[in-house]
Image (cartoon, rainbow, N blue to C red; front, side):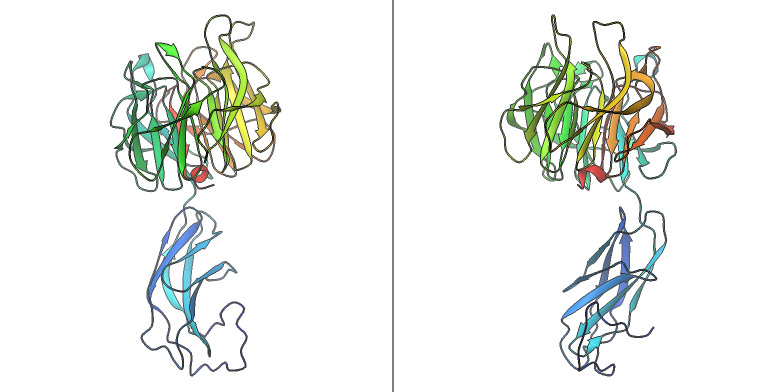
Length: 405
């Protein structure tokens, strides 16, 4: 393999006889649109000390640099096969390539947890999809408990599910999984209060749960640091006590929309937000286009989507509407399009490109296994994605694509 000049390298002293030898033991591990490249520095550094290293996806202009191993290359296309070349550089120029084996980056994963199945049976199953590739979900493993009416959140590496019902009793338990590797969930800790029909949101560091209901509707918000197992900490309060809200987030804001109340106001159009890094009470954001609870929300780093839901009283109970907000800008929602069905109790997840809804209960009251998606940046109706392993509603969801905002 011929020598390759380091990106931006210009020197009057370039001498191919004085450059380092190629790095050895080059290996690349693919993840979500990227590759983490490890290597061993060459023993022969040529005519001078090594000042840096570079890595490139062979046949592309996608590269990255670092002062030592490893080097992460981002911007790769999921499902495409790459070979990675690594070089060292000193004052005389770059070395020849050390070459990795072939790697295939994966797409962002969406996870679906638990839920109610046929006959009201409660599931402890975990399933996953690759968000960029339509198709049916795949078995991931099992939760520690049989969860329903729970809520999920995530970082780029770890997914959490918290609260809800363990069978038909409320729980404050939080489980977690490592998203990139299939397997059973582990214990993370506990929420501050047992409650079901809970909502959640997260950025790359904090997971937040809001509202819920066990014996009485609650306005509680609590949070965890996703990378550190342990019990949740009190964050503040929502502007209204409600359950069955829908949560989404940007890198800085968590937003909770709609929900169910009690008495003369059984459902809300209210949207609240908090600044994720700063504990405190929620602030009014605006309102949904239609008062409803039991919707499913997802988001990119800029836009939040609320799909479906249920309201009462009213001539129409189940909704197929999708509306959206720009998370950085308070106000009322804007029409985005429609879900395939009028439905409620579905879960939702997303990456930067796609929003995905799964399962739920249609207006015929039948549970569904349908997964559907939209392109986050383009308004329009949802399209068929594939199917869950079985029809379920009241699941929880998360993804490493959103968690890695």
